[in-house]
Image (cartoon, rainbow, N blue to C red; front, side, top):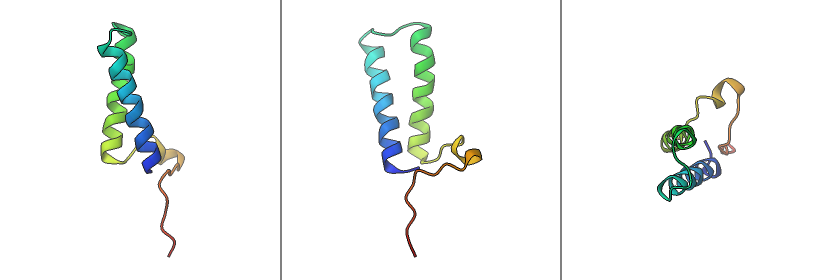
Length: 65
């Protein structure tokens, strides 16, 4: 997972957290984005997205030899 992908995911997590803690979203409307935000946070921290693998998606730059 590339840096841009990780940054975008973390920004989305922050946005969902702000919306939740300001009371803009609540109930089921907060639970579903909250779960997705947690998944984004975890995949950002480990730098691997399991959904990318079957589709062959790579957002990380490879070093030229």
